[in-house]
Image (tube, rainbow, N blue to C red; front, side, top):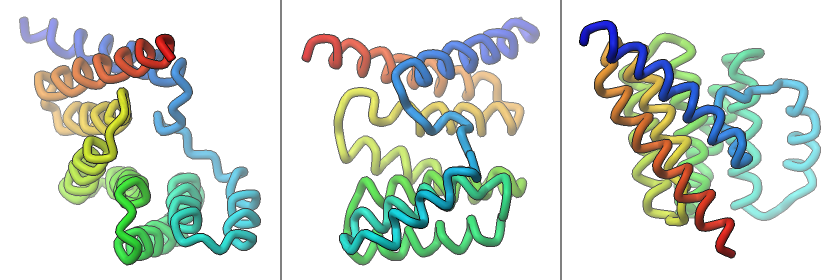
Length: 172
């Protein structure tokens, strides 16, 4: 049984990632710093605070593997702006980015705080499958901590959310 749980966890993570990617979610370890110049152009050309906050989160997320200081600065700016305008989706995006950043730097406690906030906010904003990426991230974090059972629970829940999103979109 001791060997079975880590293998199940690994299998569920792989299955979750393939389903989420198949549904078009971009948040499964998809940092791409080459997207930043285009995002910056878009940021400079928009005046709506909601769009600006979400763009800052995207910039932050995509800089995580290239420039940690800039990723942190833009993530914190996104969080502050999202809080000021009280936009739950933008807050979720900012916490997601800051959570990944913290995990990348090995600060798993801070990462979990941000990822739990992202999960709470994603559930509040509604929509089938909206919480799947946050649940998958928490599963990945639990696995990183050596909690294979906890990771498996998160991955199973994330997979259920992702499947629900696929079902509801096919009915539309």
